[in-house]
Length: 210
Image (cartoon, rainbow, N blue to C red; front, side, top):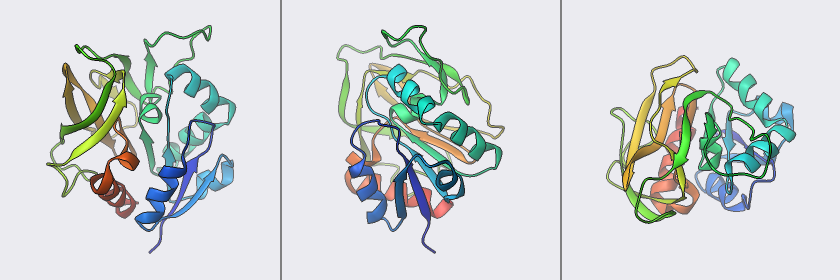
């Protein structure tokens, strides 16, 4: 069965590569911020590149915060990627000229902080340590994924989604959260669309779980 996926369009970078990857793995894809389309899709993919607070501002302006919250209330799957994953946390210490700095969506308790590493940003291919029983990483537990970021959540303090979260980690100077799976809400700090065959398989795993 073909799954319908909306890529949430709120002005966050070039998302054409995301659309192409989803089409590659067999999804019926629509790039839109239309509320009804986003609510009825089998899956909602929330991209994000750039600065945390700018993404949050764009997301709220496009109604994305309400769309995500409503989908979670209805138990409909959401996948956030890179900054689209970071915004699921309470907030970020990333500097911003936006005052007051907008908070995150707060579905995951924790703060996104600057990586504690000799070289920042973390840019390139890295292995991850998958959570036991990970659905997203099934069959690709030993693969590498592509990261481009200077900030990340060091830990998940609590999930407010109501499930039993599975936390995948990675290392760059110190340990950080690379992915979370918590029922219908999931996210990755790395970019599946830039991670070649491994990234495509991860998204395929997500589609099959919808």
